Image 1 (tube, rainbow, N blue to C red):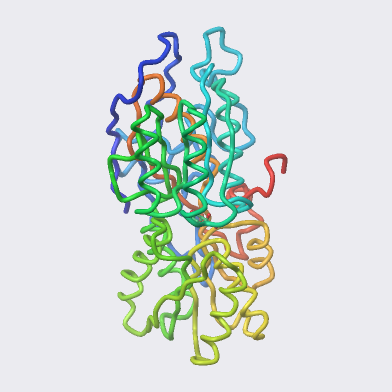
Image 2: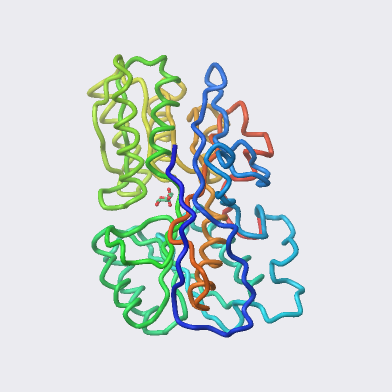
Length: 387
Ligand code: T6T
C-alpha cells in the first residue's frame, strides 16, 4: 500500500491576487493492491475508475483527496463547476506560459500526458508549449531544457531523463525563478520540483510480480526487461518487482536486461534469453517500448502465449498484442491525469498558492478478459489528442 500525504506548502513567486483557488482536491492516494480475480483475469487496482472516489481513500483516512484532476475527472468529461471555464473571474492561469518537456517524443504515454496538459492549460487560461527529445537520453534532453530556460517560461513541467544528469538544468531553472514541476520521472535531489506527480512505480512493480507469478503458476524462471539504469520510474518498477518476486519460493528470477527503450533491442534480448533458457516461464517488461519489443521477440520465436508477459503501459500496439494473446497483462498508468494535475500545480506554484509536493496516481491492470470494459479501456493511451 502506498503511503499517503496531504501536506501542502506555499511555493513560487507571488502572482495576481484574483486567482481562483482550485487546489485542495489533489493529494496522494494509496494504490489498492491488485487482487487476482481468478484464473489469469487480473482485476483493476482502481476500485472506482469513474473517478468519484479514489481507490483506498476510505480505508486510508478521510483526509485523502482525489487523484483525479481537480474539477475535471477523466479525459473526455465536461469540466465541473469551478473548473474555470465560463467563470466571470479571471482564470488562474491567464498570462502564464508553461512549457511541457516530455521524456521522449512520440511515446503515447507522453502524448496522453500532453492531452491532459493541454486540457488543463485551456481550462485554466494558460499558454502551453510542448517539446521532447528524440530519445530518452539526458544528453539530448538537457540542451532542450537549456533552451526552454532561456525562453523564460513561468513554469516547466518535465519528465527528467536521468535521476542525476537532469538535475543541473532543473536547478538552473529554479535558480532563475521558473517553477519546476516533475511529471512521471524525478531526480534524486529532492529540492528540485515544487510538485512531483507520478504513478507509484515501486508498487506497480510489485503488482507486476504478483501478476506474473500467478500467470506462471508460481513456478519457473522469470526475466525483467528494463529500459536503462537512471530512470526513476523504471528503476522503481524493477525494484518493486524484485522484492516481490523473491516471496515466491519456486520462482527463479534470472535477472534484468536493458532495452535502451528500443523495441528491437528488447526483441533481441528475448531471442538470446530463449536460446540460453528455453524453459523461460515469464517476462516483466517495465515500459511501453520494452513490452512491445518483448512481444515481438516472442512472436518471432513462435513462443507467444507460451512465455507469459506482464508489461507496463498501454499504447495502441500493446493493446493489440494483449488482444492477440502475445502479452497477458498490462499495468496501465494514468498519464492524462499526471499531465492535468501537473498544470494545476504549476499554476498554483506560480501564483503563490498552495502546492501539493507529491501526488501519486494509480493504475488499472488490463488483461484479455477485461480490455473491452470501458472502466479499463478509458485509460488506454492516445496516439493523438483528437483520438
Ligand atoms: O512508462 C512510461 C513512463 O512512465 C516511463 O518513465 C518511461 O517510459 C514510458 O514513457 C513508456 O514508454
